[in-house]
Length: 115
Length: 112
Image 1 (cartoon, rainbow over the protein chains, first blue to last red):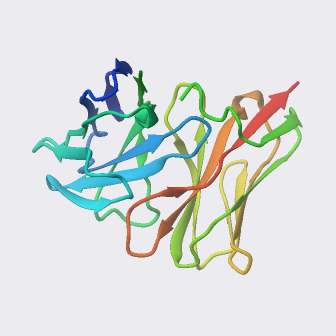
Image 2 (image 1 turned 45 degrees about the vertical axis):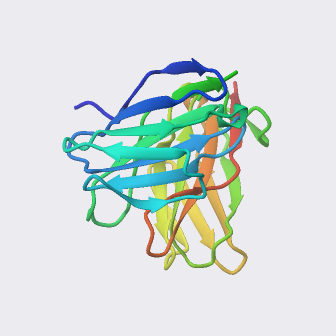
Image 3 (image 1 turned 90 degrees about the vertical axis):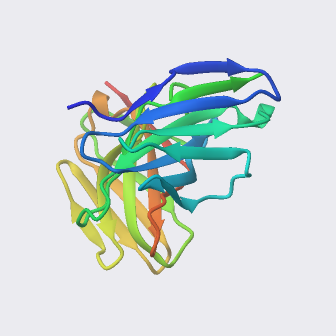
């Protein structure tokens, strides 16, 4: 049973460009959350997708957008890249309506470097 | 990832000793608290969680303590092993949300 997978592993982009990151959730999971982890910090919540819609959003500008597909996989898009967008982007999946305790499974992340 | 925790607080312990990692959280309305372990090159891995109506929960070699009065959370690892070396994060889940709010991590280094 594959866990959460993300692609690509590493990515280098130039300021002003656009990037798309991909995530496949753990088998049986229907909810995907995205996090940004800057160097030396804890992950910060970007948004969450469920039933192909954005359900919750953190304090990130509209340059950050996403999508969820019918097979529950998800994409994170970032437009007009800034140097400060350089970070590790983590995808986490979970099963909606699961009982207590709540648990999200994280992928290995995509390391984005903006030059 | 491989570069997480460059400037994080570090706890160094000898193999076999017990480790205690502390965390202060911010939202008194949070319903769940979770400890994650992040090894180099990997995403955070769930260790143990505790609900806000509890003050202690035990797992295999780990214990989480919650003090709501001072908004403090701790993770105790018994008989620390080299494989426990990683960055540890506490996270809270505010009531009526599904998002994780992570605290500042602590790097745990285990030496023989």
